Image (tube, rainbow, N blue to C red):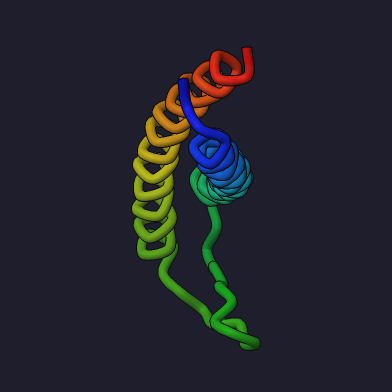
Length: 110
């Protein structure tokens, strides 16, 4: 049987885990949105015969080589896919640990 202090500590840890879970979900959603945006940009650049391509650099727009921009976009896309995968794995592990801790708390209360 655990003490009230131990139960309180478990509740605090569970709350912290739930906050981290929400943070991971937000990060994954942001990455998903950026990946969709990148996909549209890549499709636009590859489907049309663009002769001139411009890119924002801060508050100015500069002319760039189409291939260079495509390469940058694809590299960013690959990086984000890896990041998303890593975050998803971390989220799943954290959700599993939170569920275990929640079960421990329920058993403590009984």
